[in-house]
Image 1 (cartoon, rainbow, N blue to C red):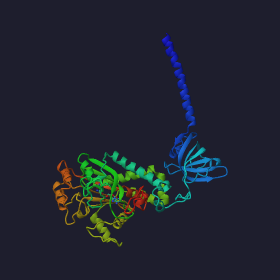
Image 2: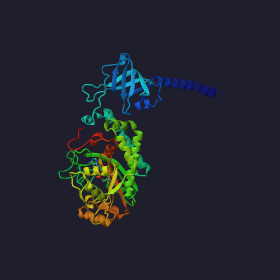
Image 3: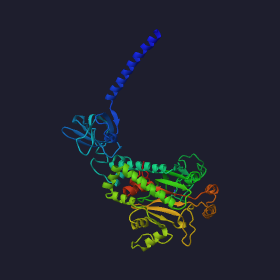
Length: 484
Ligand code: 4AD
């Protein structure tokens, strides 16, 4: 009895303690503002709530009765308008400064913004001297101008839009592959092969004297990868669909508007292929699906480019997506170029490499839409490209996708899966020993397969209409330039 009473007794204070805790949590919640990102504020679900928003001041306007700020935290192109009493103004509150604002989120009386933050506190977290800061409020700086400040350009509207588009396009590409049954492979950054055989390699050795003079850290010369293709080919002996998406390096001494020393490549490899069409279908579907995703999920950011940086480009992108991409052979491409009245700087004849000027002409000729060019001269292609065994114009089953404004976006081929032909070609170029492991792939359960690589920065140039590849990558690396 006593025990029971004691037990019952002990219950009551616990319950009342709980009520007390609940009360104080509610009380605390009421007083502690909810942290909100700018994009969340625009969703309208927190109207009337006491919130804290942190970000950087994109504009500041002081009136007699009100102080107006625009606050951006990178979550959206739109900045959140903050309305405050002029007493909250402070000399350290300037364009570019980092701030923390608490207040109540209200429906805005202005038509062009759904909500505004009525501030009761503004705390400057990081000051920014507006005289020294290279960007000025309300000024639209050119991409060339902001490129001079690689450590600061993410604070401009244009570059933050670019970075959001880049992030969304990355997601879209991964989603395409996931939805289509591809397995992602993390191919190595350091490798001992020169996949493309073009010799555009950066060698990797420790900077300190960790190894004896004349020796290599890995015991063999090692390089930064120029392509993950050969590692994907290893995997395509066990997985019928694989892809990789990562940094790629080429020691090209080029300052062109479409070449970088470090860029990102999307590469896919498909097993049991029957023809080049198996590859062109993946290339085209991936291009369409990623572009439609970006246009739908990043509309404001894409619009900024299509309206202010490259006016009219949206029509060009919509036009690209209208029809299936045409396919022409390399021989047809040469005929088209030879019939053209345009004078090219580089001569055109069967066997020549297509230059950017030729690629652009072909795209225009086909109606300013992406175009596949297939069956390139055998001698122009690396050892892995499948021999078409044709005569007298000896070609390989290779394909490039050329796109408006950029030229070559993707390069791919069917791979030589026939052991005798592959061995003969490797012998011809003296690489039979180096690639004995590659020959093994043809010895054990070899299947017809093929793949391609897409230059991710060139893809962004194509959909946004950006002229220089240096403006679509966070930190461009090219010959004679590697700041920070
Ligand atoms: O045509 P590429 O050299 O093809 C390969 O590397 C193949 N092994 C890929 C494969 O089959 N898995 O390069 C593919 C694409 C090019 O079409 C181009 O868009 C881009 O990569 N690219 C560059 N992008 C920026 N800067 C550079 N220096 C580039 N070199 C190639």
